Every structure is written in structure tokens, then in C-alpha cells.
Image 1 (spheres, rainbow, N blue to C red):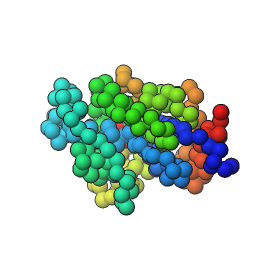
Image 2: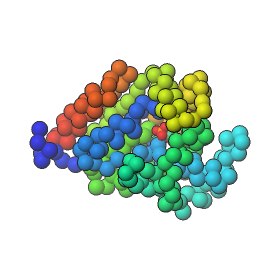
Image 3: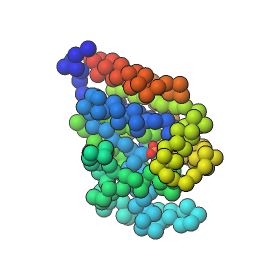
Length: 234
Ligand code: DC
């Protein structure tokens, strides 16, 4: 199919944590020349902001009023560098810091705060104004872009996801155990699917992808096929 006949669309990729959503969304965006927005990174950046301002106590309780006060003054951007796409918080590269277990342990609590979600959803919609975007998260197809032309819902069993995440973290030298990572994945699934505000759920018109037994190449080819179908529809 000629790329000339394809119109620019919004591609929403939602699903459980550690399903490889970001990796596939990034690869797809690169291949088709779209902008990639990692909304999980935005929630992680707000979590890091709260932690650095001392707004999360040792029991994981958040000082919501102070965080909501600080949020409008904070900038969250993405920069494409030779080291890949990097998340910037107030202009500083926080890509590595937002991926630590410490941030992962607090991010679901931050992502459950209604005012935080409202703020970030508004920022995310601005990215979609020009179309030509791949955005991944939990509520992209349901809340951020309910009219997205292509919606993918990714899932895989918790153990498969924890295995992948454990390999990633240990490769980075992080000290952790498989059981700790599995507990974190299950804990995040629980909070993500049961929170009152924009819980993780499949949009009625999403296409399902269980990638437990797929290679990265198979997955990328499948995604391109879905994109070409959606972008050539009238
Ligand atoms: O995809 P991730 O693991 O980087 O996401 C981090 C957390 O942010 C995860 O616990 C769910 C939350 N999140 C969300 O609530 N809504 C989104 N659109 C993206 C992420």
C-alpha cells in the first residue's frame, strides 16, 4: 500500500503495565513518522515532582493540595536525543529517575488523583490536535481520545509481564527480586483497574492484542497492518 493514500490519524495504545506498550508504540511511531507520547512517563514525572517536593510521606500518603498547587507551574516535555526519547520535567532530563522502583511504587497513587488526571489529560489532548500521533497509556482510547481512529488494547498474564520487567530492571543494575516486581505489577493492575477516576478498561471499539507468544517483529508487523487499515479508511 502506498503511504500517499494514508491520512494522518490518532493511534491509542492502552493496556496493563509492562506489556511492552511503550516499546511497540515507539517502534510504530518511528516507522510511520508519527510523534510518540508516553503518558505513563507524564504520570511518573508528576510522581517524581511530588517526591522531590517532599509531598509523599513514608506511608505513601500524598499532600494533594500542595501537589495540585505545584502542577500548573511544572512543565513536562519530551526531547528526542541520540539516547532516544527523553522525558523532561521543568527542562531537566528525568528519564532514568522516573523508571526507578521508588517512582513505580508511588505512581499509581498519583495517577488516581482526579485533579492530576484532569491536568495531564488536557496536556495530552494538545499533542493530538495535529493528529499523526501514537499515544500509549491506560485511558487514551476511553478518555483522552475516545474518537481515535485506531485503538489497541494490550494484555498478557501478570507473570509474563513481571518476568520482562524483572529482566529490564536487573539489566539496569537495579537491586530487586522477581517476587517484588510481580507484587508491584499486580498492585498496579489492581489500582489501575479499580480507581474511581478513568480506570483502565478496554474501549468497546479497541482491537485486542495478547502478545505473550509474539516476537517483537511479529508484533510490529501486526501493528503496521492495523495502522494501514485504519489510516486508509474513509
Ligand atoms: O505505563 P507506565 O507503567 O509507565 O505507567 C505508570 C503508571 O501511570 C501506571 O501505574 C498507570 C498510570 N497511568 C495512568 O493511570 N494513565 C495513563 N494514561 C498512563 C499511565
